Length: 355
Ligand SMILES: *Cc1c(COP(=O)(O)O)cnc(C)c1O
Image 1: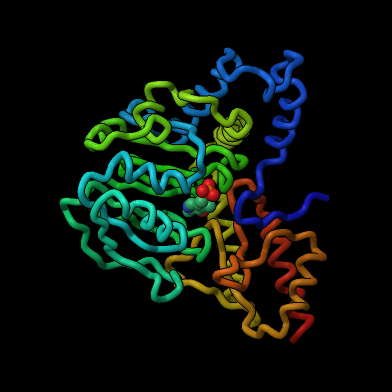
Image 2: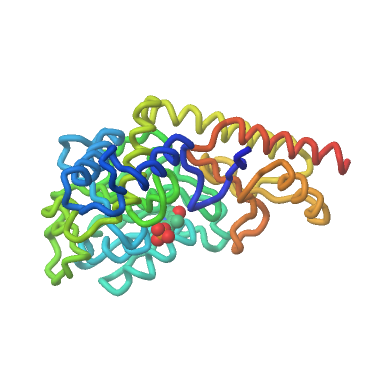
């Protein structure tokens, strides 16, 4: 039987997507060629790219609203740099809510004045800062909607006239948001969309073109827009699998449907963490992520017993990030509810065993 995969990233993908993807590796479109041995300029692949881009906009409700979707390379980590390269003229505001925000700040510093408007670093990123003011003259405000490592998530976004840039790597397509509030959204594919190797960037075209510096072509959003996300050879496989996952999500009922499933999964696990006297959550209750649930044992001496139980139950990827410790259950879109139930069953079995 397939394992219950709680891995944080790369992570679980829908079974049927994996099946279709493996078939396309051998014989794509019944053309007796592999997906990865045809030209990216072939009609067959151009269709894949177009479909991936339009599905992304459609699922986010951003069609015909001045946004462009791009599938780029270099991971979300390259976006830390590209965002600043393309948008930072004088001053940018950043919210420091986790390891990834911190890295984004480090990259952007080279391009202008950086204002860290709030940070939860002092408490191990265990909460989302609430009261802060955003400089009105900032070129943009950057934030990380879901903090994959610590397990916190913005439930509400700051109200501001400053353009919003958001790293949604680990919760894109997981919940309904007013995506029009954002001017630029980026997400590495490997958390909720596909395999590693491509990054989705959704950008409102009119925020571009306002910096004076020369931007190298590969780092220039406008160049990628003008070339329909095919300025150079894209990651054909990663884009194809992302397209299949987006189609899978659309067929299920899109974000409104998956949001309900994700809420059910999160409620099931967090209620067990709160009920079971042997576990405790790590982050502020109101900021808990529906995607990455972090928790620890109340008594660490039972670690070996618990680890053995979940491993025997076919659960994978439950160890916490090395900077946080404890456990992290990542419950991305493709993780079925029964996998969360399997984890809860193990937590209850553990309770019976040690108490
Ligand atoms: C994983 C992750 C990243 C880094 O993504 P890469 O594609 O490895 O560069 C950045 N931000 C967030 C929120 C992440 O979860």
